[in-house]
Image (cartoon, rainbow, N blue to C red):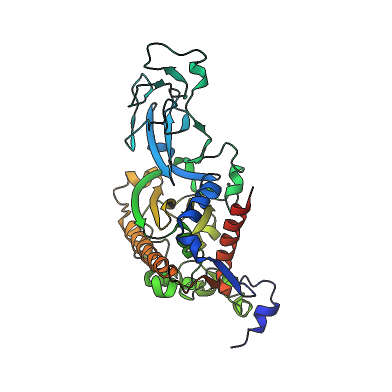
Length: 390
């Protein structure tokens, strides 16, 4: 089949215009390359951990694994957030063995030799009868990490010099102001472990060629997805329907639907400050590579966090954020949103595992991107640039 003339000449067409190779297949399962990505991507960029409300009150803590590193997140005595490597300065023992808890008033005490630290990370006391010449408590604070709270989301960086925080997002940080993110409550959480490399999931997220076959319910709810397209201009012939507001051309939900739920009906108190355009589109995506994307709907916000567990293993958590009024209203039932999301994300997880299994073929050194997969090219170019960054 010849290339459509509109693809060749239309400057508004979003798709790729030439053959583009994918990343090498070994990037998705080779342990040595996985270690390289941990160092150059995961340990140098901002990574989403949790909602600030997950640490309730002073001395509360949580631990998180990012690749081979463990982060200790704690509220100090003034309820400020602090982040440290979960490592004692004595001989490197893990300070916390539990995922969450509350430190005693005495502070952070290493379970091995009882070195004691303040919640600010200062070494206060050792268990030795005396200290050797040249030893000073002030020289051995915990290994502190940059931590940033934004709109109730807590991010950490394993680098002392991370990129500017706002630069890690694909849209301006004010794009979702109408959703009042900082005041939202967590209505529910889902968690899954996916047998695939973390990049496989991000690539799946960045295309909809798979949507008609993999997501039949979603394709019905979002008609343009049913056409295997993400946006209006992904179609080489988009100008033929440039003025058509039918959702199968313009995007948004099917006629009569309001939100991403089993029946398309809203399940929570709608956000009052949304524009007519935002309500019509019904899903606004905000992405921060490599760890999180946020999807704002008319009645809830979905937060999907990815963390690497190994070359071919990824942990995914999904948070449902709602206005406090939604949780207080007995008429509001989030289950239709939760069940719909569980269906769609389970479909994604399963097909990502299918993708991962095929990548190990000795015959498949590299794939090719099709025109609709321009966002995958952008993601893979980002990976390449991160790997090449000094």
